Length: 207
Image (cartoon, rainbow, N blue to C red; front, top):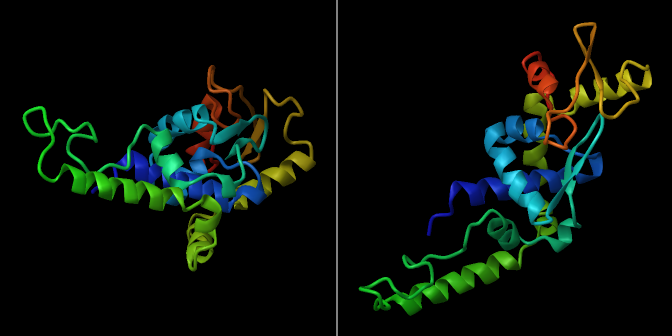
């Protein structure tokens, strides 16, 4: 069995959200830079994760994504299935038509293995994964490597000093001592996913 890129990346992104859940919303740019997943690919995955009710968007300055349910209620299998992937090792995808329209000799063997894999992944929640030995330490190393949350702290300080607009739809970004006003990209619905943020990301600010 080989888990697809969609399945692997969706689990990685959700684990990132679970690890940083107490710190507040997480931007896709943070996940992209920290986990090495392209931003455009994450946008596609999160559209499906949101539709499945696993994540929710938070508007306004400091917005991003959060888990829609407690990490203890979200299984790894549910995440994989939410992005249209199946935990299945059969060639016929469980249909039983792999050999001239009928079952092959090993169909029951691979079906049984698929069921065991699904049961295994269904028994592991995000909360359990976060608590596994080495996971918190590895996450901290990755965060430190890219300077994650340093910009968030600077942004929070800027908000407290009035350098950010109180209007959630028109945040004022601060770059190299300048103030920029920008609105969210139409249809995105998520703060920090706007066109202005793309320009800012090139200057070191993340969406």
